[in-house]
Image 1 (tube, rainbow, N blue to C red):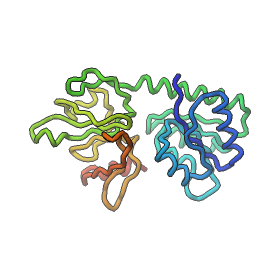
Image 2: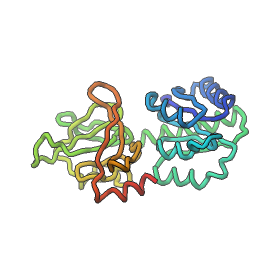
Image 3: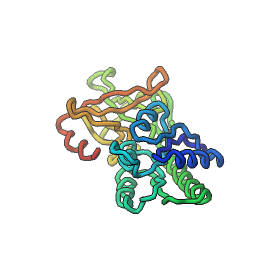
Image 4: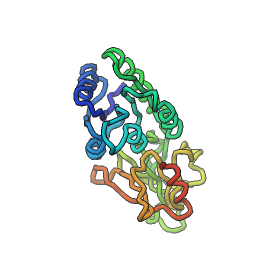
Length: 252
């Protein structure tokens, strides 16, 4: 099982350090962020790009709860908190609506309990990763095995001309590729679930798990894609009037 990059959030400094030390002692994950406030956490992970989250639920400030952070980021999450029972319904909704690995452990917990829960959680995450791949043809490169969660969005390839049915596919971890003679109407046949890849415009199909924000003023969404320069870049995509209500509903 390959190690995932993990981000930790707990408003108790001692608990945060203890969780980090337990994870690193057992070499379960690579801790790339560890914060005591949601605001600093959200700023930091823009640069650290975690794959899994370990979150407290009540953070002792009015900025955001751990649940709100999880819903915003839509990443696999293990909640480690003293009040998990209050949030069971929301955890179920997070897991169901966003097709995520979600687990929890209630404080206080022993080191053994935390490690065992984490190991089970990470096994589920790893299994989920292995099972969620599709094979795509990029020009002359055939049957490329692609993790669905690495796909941010698909767009019409306007450079190929109005008559072309080619598309561009944009990722979190590799440069943009061309899909030759690829129809949006047949996406599900290729492995793109309509429940995950939503229409925001006739030219765009977006992985809803990668929508970072909805900007009401401009009626656009914010996403991050991997560029030819080898880094993640924030982009805005316009949401056409026909899809605005549905996209807002999805992002609630």
